[in-house]
Structure formats: structure tokens, C-alpha cells
Image 1 (tube, helix red, strand yellow):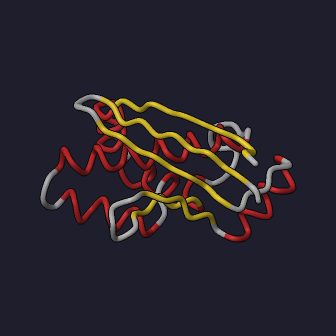
Image 2: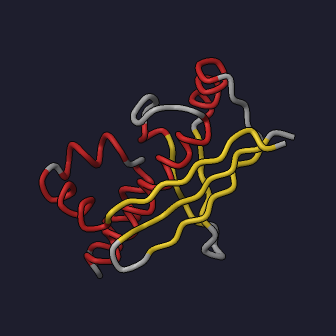
Image 3: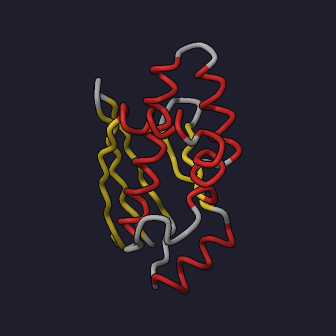
Length: 133
């Protein structure tokens, strides 16, 4: 059964500006350590691609929050990780303690989180469906 859906669109250029203005503070607040490592590895080779990846991660987190009915930064962004399977398929990994908080605070439970992310020249978009079985 579908428990919630969420979609978000992020300007890659706007996120890039935020990264340069408040890089360390922003990274610690928004990205998990796993995501931080991924973004920096990409940035060492291609800054534009790193900004796209970061914008995709951010859009996925916002779409996830919308799917559970939560507001922006109502739960710690850095406790939600957006990662990729070996095939490239993106997925959301939620810290177990955060799952409990979401269940209690937002009355949402989920067994399956489906995620799709796309990038275009100026924007990153993410779509999330949460389900319980």
C-alpha cells in the first residue's frame, strides 16, 4: 500500500552557490558522511557533475520528507543517505533510529522506499514513493 509520495526540483546552480558560500556548515547539516565522500570524489574530477550529484541528493531528501509529510529540516537531513546500487539505481538509506522517529512523529511507517532522480542542464529532480507491506 502506498503510504506517501513526494517530488522535488532543485536548481543545480543555486545549490552550487550555497556549496561555495557555506560549504563546510552546509555539508555537515545536509549530507551524510557517505554522501560527502561521494561528492568530493566526483568534485576532484568534475565540479559540474559534483554539483549535479549534490543537487540530486538534496532533491531526493526533500522528496522523501514530502512523502512522509514532514517539513524541510524537520528531521536531520544528514541521517538520510542517498546512495546508488552497483547498477546505478538510486536508493534511500534511513538510519534505524530515524525510522522510529518518523513512525512516532509523522505516523508513517514504511517497508519500501522507491526513488528516481534525474538531472538536466539546470535542474535535478527526484520522485519518492514510500510503501508498507
